[in-house]
Length: 115
Length: 114
Image 1: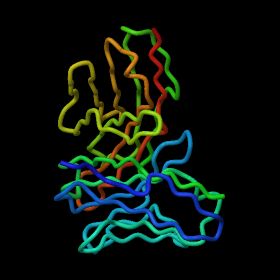
Image 2: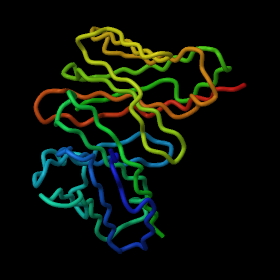
Image 3: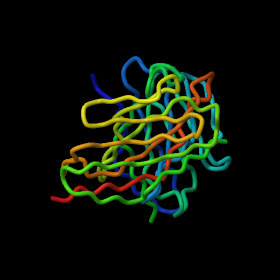
């Protein structure tokens, strides 16, 4: 079974450009979580999605950031008009259920660098 | 919201010794506590977790203890090996409803020396 797949692994953008990060959950998992990790820091929750629904976006900045998890295809985290402070590792996790009965398993992350 | 504190931030032990990492949490509604190991440039990997209906769980050289009254939980690694060197993160989450996001501690960098 393939685990959580994220791409790209590394993404370089100039200030003002858009960044699109993709996450394919474990096969059969319908719950996806996005976390951000700054260098030498822990992971910070951003958003929790089920298929076609945003369940909790309390950790996601109100501006420039958006997330979706369509019926078909991967979950997308989109950052518009990127700034230097967006440089971080973005991790996606998935679970079979939206509670701790099913643990969250992480992908390898996308390392976003803003020039 | 939940706040998780983790100590120490760095820990150096000699091979074969034990390592203990401690975390405290603030939200009494939290009842799921996973531990993740993250090697440099890699994904966080779940190594053990505990739910609030038990006080201790063990898996080979790794054990976790939970004190719900005091709101703290700890990771114990015995007979440490060089491959245990990594950053370890504790986390807390309520397991009810849709509030299943993980709140992470700030991490402990464990160095196992020969």
